[in-house]
Image 1 (cartoon, helix red, strand yellow):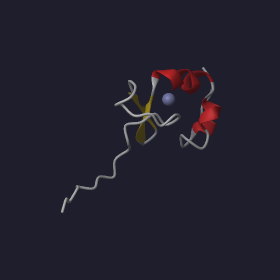
Image 2: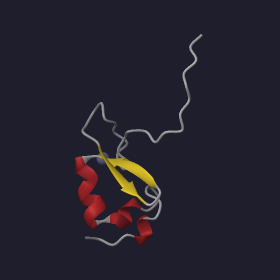
Image 3: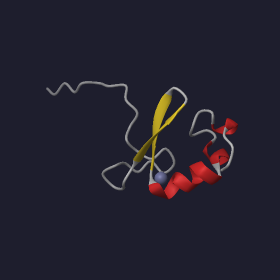
Length: 66
Ligand SMILES: [Zn+2]
């Protein structure tokens, strides 16, 4: 009988492609009251096309493309 401790923790996986840190490098960023993870492949989306993250990242509709 294995009792795993349950943590309400954001998984260390890219919020876009859902790959986790065992597969690809993942970077952490802070936004509003929370933090998120994203892979290098999707950092440009965060910078240039944040509207593509609507539905994935809370508040993305308020972000402006850099
Ligand atoms: Zn990704």
